[in-house]
Length: 151
Image (cartoon, rainbow, N blue to C red; front, side, top):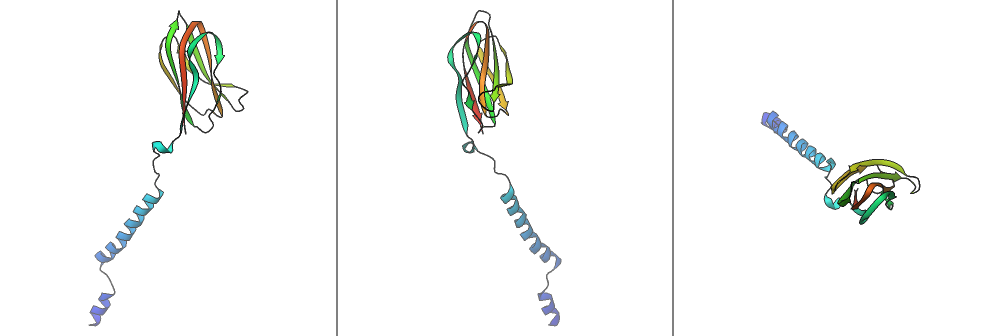
């Protein structure tokens, strides 16, 4: 009788192993769920679309778009749609940035455009304000440009 009473307070190796393992597995699974990153969904991101250059014909000259405050965003794309080119023309577009909307610095240049088509330039690390500088060489281009910014 004494031996069965002593045995009643102890567990076998298999029983002890299972009773310790199950709570440990549950604790690890809970920690993984608690601390794992939740992927951001589309509803978690803010997108801003701005018209950098409105649709129109731009003749031989250097010009600038309006400036846009984009400090709340960390990445963007500049889209340029050229629908017509007169003569043999070139179009150089430089993305410029500014911290004060007054002094401008060249950030990224889009490859020189010489024909109709759709062009895109991805950008990051652009600071507080952004604008486009364009230089039309030759006769003219008919184009428009959008900036799409995401946070």
